[in-house]
Amino acid sequence: MNKSNGFTLPEVLVSLGILTVGIVLALTTSVVAFRGNERSRDLVNAQMIMESFLEEFGMLPYDHSTFSDDGDSLDLGDTDDPDHSTTITCGNKEFTVLWNVVENHGLDSLGNLIRVPSLKTISVFVIWDNHQISVTTLKSREG
Image (cartoon, rainbow, N blue to C red):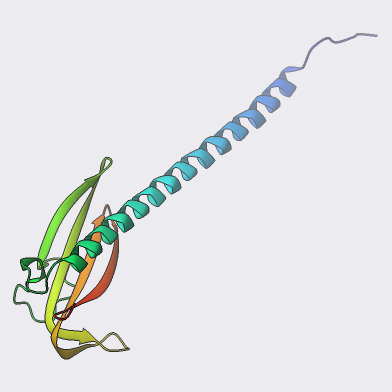
């Protein structure tokens, strides 16, 4: 009877193949998780930038130059030629903040612009890579 003290070549090749598949799957999962974490971090940073701008807008007076309209009529969604823009660097990522102002108009319950004296409607966009978040807020002369 012949006794063997090792593995045969086919057994070694099969086990190496299984090990390789496992390593590739683990690396793929790590890359997907890293990208998901990066997107989440960017979204949190964009939200913090947005909140910072909204807080600043709340403290400024109604007639401040930050709330000037460039004359485009009812251009709240215009990201190609906004009324105002600036760039913020957070970490190693650049975020572009745009905002458009429409004077003497507000939004009805369906989101349509309606004429309202002494009210400014402001749409703010934070854009990075190929992503963006936006919010629309109001500024009244009274407060």
